[in-house]
Image 1: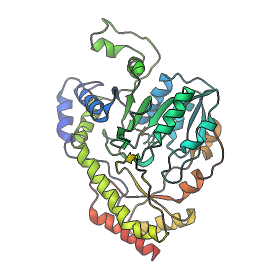
Image 2: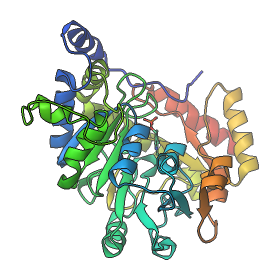
Image 3: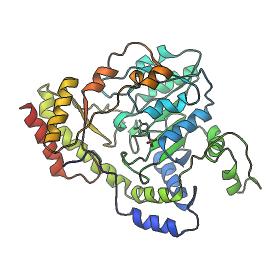
Amino acid sequence: MIIFNRPPFTGNEEKYLIQSMKSLKISGDGEFTQRCHRWFEEKLGCKKALLTTSCTHALEMTALLIDIQPGDEVIMPSYTFVSTANAYALRGAKIVFVDVRPDTMNIDETLIEAAITEKTKAIVPVHYAGVACEMDTIMDIANRHKLFVIEDAAQGMMSSYKGKALGTIGHFGTFSFHETKNYTSGGEGGLLIINDENYITQAEIIREKGTNRSQFFRGMVDKYSWVDIGSSYLMNDLSAAYLWGQLDIADEINDERVNHWKMYYKGLSGLSKKGVLELPVVPDSCLHNGHMFFIKVKDLNERTNLIEHLKSHGIHAVFHYVPLHSAPAGIKFGTFFGEDIYTTTESERLVRLPLYYGIKQEDIESVINTIVEYYA
Ligand SMILES: *Cc1c(COP(=O)(O)O)cnc(C)c1O
């Protein structure tokens, strides 16, 4: 059986976990959390990095930071994970979905401006498969209309756009360390990047149950108290220790994934040239992280058959998001602005192939050969 995903594991996690277990500080913001924070701030080049319990929670923090009120509107693609929308719907926002570009499956930046109203508060671009959205255009629109930009970079760790790390371009960036992502903190975990200095103190307060405990630990105040609304969004230090065991060799993990991605691309380019299927598109402005390899086939019917065919050959390939605007909560909390030209039809054609850190080259070859045979 060739499985679809295996959580990343390097073997370094154990020693750091034990080190953390034996330390006398295993709750949030302990030694490994501090190490990870410094690593992200240096590696990504950002003002402030805060580990969180999940990307979902990092997104929820941004909804509090930008003070979403009932009736505010937030623009995003419909082709994304539920948390992108749920985080803002939770605060009473109306979600405004716009169509995706068929090449990258990212939000179509040319459709955003028309969807803006006086109630619009933010744009949430999702960097699908770790390939960047057209951020220059999005930032320009946001600046002209005084809107916040929150990058959902859940899949984008180590990817960049015109040399800038994803998550460091908008006002905020969020990442996931769920077991399905390129790096994991032991199953669940996330990261909030704050690029606008004015929000750092408030983010620390929101993350620490609405208290100024972070300032207290730094000796900036002599007691800590309840100063604002917040919740418990900080990662425990054991999870940070697990993550540290992967950041240790982050470049190696990234290079390996990108090589796997290239193997698929090369191996399937013959079918692409014949017009049988489509391969992912990476614009010149983007360096990606090999998060995902997907192909697009003719239609939903062909996809179902291909997934079935691969399964009968012991290969687990999967489809991805069912567009949010057609889901029960999407209908309740959101609305699709303009015409759904690509979101539904393109999502129905997309198949993701097995790709993870440690997958064997012969397994990738076997997946490629099985697809080639299917179309022979
Ligand atoms: C994985 C993912 C999330 C959620 O991440 P969690 O850490 O599981 O909360 C949000 N958005 C996108 C685009 C994702 O891929």
